[in-house]
Length: 460
Image 1 (tube, rainbow, N blue to C red):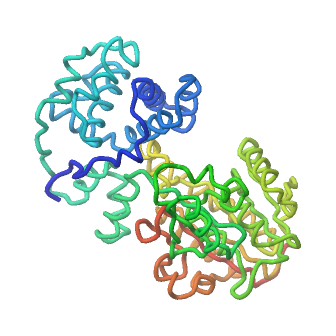
Image 2 (cartoon, one colour):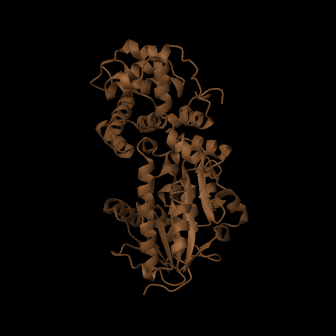
């Protein structure tokens, strides 16, 4: 690694249309994030307040606010090398302005002629104490090469803008080449991935998208996965999307849904309990797998997220999905536990989380996950399959939870995911008996899953 600065600028097509109003929305959202608000909520509020932004401007604002969190460590390093240590910059608004100007310079390849109109006084945000000439110097002053530490782990943490402690922990688990690929993937704007519906119709969906001028390709890791390769977002206006033949779903998430199937055959006619259904992404996939003769029983501790799942089920007219409370877990053939987790596999989509996460929080997640798995297992009937899954890449939340569970529950056995995926796809997405879908080998976020079969007596 000769330099920590990116070699090529962001693809302008992915960026949307930069404007002063788009910059204002991005900066307002970033300031809210710095004050503790989740990025998604901060962005939604900023876009709502910026009434009248065009679609491409909204896209720019969304990209910009994610990028400011995503590259925060590297942007602050650049500011420090230019003589503007963030701790001394002053107001949160000032810090956001300096980061924004540096992001447009370093990651977008723009000069002051383009950046100036977006940030100059009277300015996109107030209050502020820095003047235009300081921002201009930040953009135009030569940027020195960053002095690199001897530790390769710390170099990676700087280059890909991660906290040292997190990269040090991951370095204990993953070989250097795997680690760098993972960090690089989690440090970039993720591509859009979709699931073709109904299962087995991917070729027809790809052909229809091509007819409408949308570039898309199959993803080898999952049988129904589609990656849209053009960055225009026209896919959302296509007949395939409007008719419900496409669902936004990450590739690893599709693999988790697939692991709810039997070793041989389909889920047609089975009953599946989606214990932590959230907003319903996997619920929809499971509904397609069980078909009209099967059932999906969906629940979640978050009423707000479950309301979103209900709305999506209504939108797709999936009569095989019900939302009973409490979930009758002993009726289910398969129980999916998509457990609450640190979300370290989803940092490309939620980059603000890497600055909020701590080792202590991961330990708390581990305790919650273990309790949840114990609770669900007590109600699983003989022969039932539990699929335990996370969107974490931390072994404390993944293998460690499963291994501790198996040590306490001899009535459960671990089934290799290769039994369902087959050898070729397991080579891409499995590590031993577990699903370990890691980018860039499996595109998208990082996911984990284990198949646990109850072989002993069921609920008393």
